[in-house]
Image 1: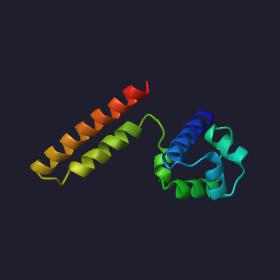
Image 2: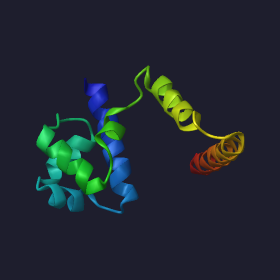
Image 3: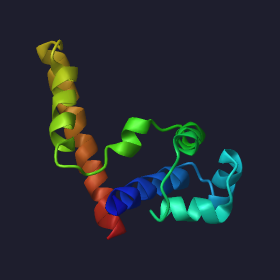
Image 4: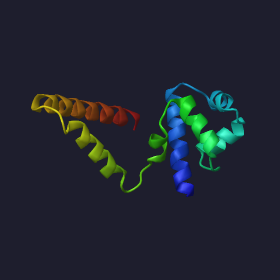
Length: 116
């Protein structure tokens, strides 16, 4: 459970930073103390449903995104979602989507390489 809390906390931190919010800003938005916010991001405290909902709303992220951490079946679920998107596409639409996916993947990996 502790690892799961750390993964969720890490995703909350990631989303917070993408919104250019400090821990203090987010704590104010969801009406908790800064130390409580820090404990959540560091996986030291369990999150009540009320605070969890406030976090998703403040960061404009889905609960699904926060909860789907690196469990063993996430990749399978994501692959099925990608296939669902392509199911009713024409051949041309599929080719365009696949090309875009490859370009996005390449761009993401390029950014990751620069961070390393």
